[in-house]
Image (cartoon, rainbow, N blue to C red):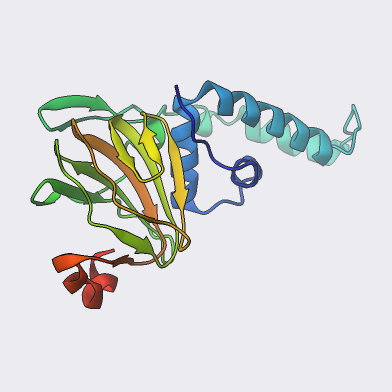
Length: 216
């Protein structure tokens, strides 16, 4: 059962369309997997719709606007819509269907280092970086602190850290107040959004800190 969800503030920003691109991808993908947040979003959209109409039940338009609207809707140039097809990917010898929000968006090939592999989405979103991340069975990411924030949406498999264990669909958002060591027993696939480099705290991984801006 999904236990970790976007905050109400994030859901509200998503509903009104003010969330950044990569965070919108994360929230949308979570909503696709979470019935609870689907219901919350429906309620938020209804409230925003009622608010935008100012409580009026009818909207009066002048004849010129009505004629223009009829001309637009009569033009079949824009009549066709294309549904996003969910993408199936192979990872760790398994086939996984990605949420539609993460499908059909360009990303790099997986770059693998030991038991960790990353595929970066080629989305321009300021300092935010969005990626698919997989960790092999028994793997972990060294203990680190976030200099910005990190969103992790678990898509498949399992992982846990000092705060507990997570299941597919869990939406975890951490910032500079958190230090953790993510580990997986069976392997996992995640969608991640990070706003700044990680700061590694222990052992040889600390050698990566000087080049953290290049690899986050």
